[in-house]
Amino acid sequence: SLGAATVKEMFAQIPNGTDWSLSTIKTFLGRLVKKNILTPTRVGREFVYAARVSEEEIIQMMTAELLGKICNTKKAQVIESLIVLSELTENDVRRLTARLADKETVTAVHCSCLENASVCTCHHEAPKQAVS
Image 1 (cartoon, rainbow, N blue to C red):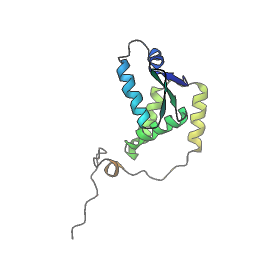
Image 2 (cartoon, one colour):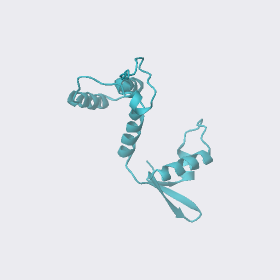
Image 3 (cartoon, rainbow, N blue to C red):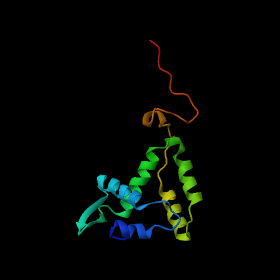
Image 4 (tube, helix red, strand yellow):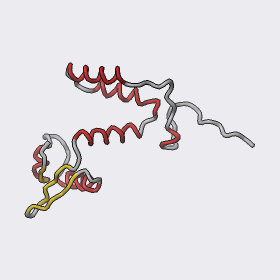
């Protein structure tokens, strides 16, 4: 939102009542630099951080990361929860409705817990191994 900003400029944007300290923000920014999301440039005695990727790309990355941690059988439930918990304008609802209407469907969704995390929480048994 700020384009390029120093740690202090970013800290000033954090709402009162948030328990983020200046050092927490510096740590967070360091992680974003390591992930190639931000570029730091030294200006005098401080760094100015600028985004290397667009906000839309970040949202897609965060969404993919979240959905990658959730079983395929639970993704629709998560999306539904996000809708319920979000404040949406009429335009937002129109966009979402149009996107859903255009969404190609599949006949079945299969559990991905065992593939992704080796722990299934879908309350079904893993496929039994054939005994030779």
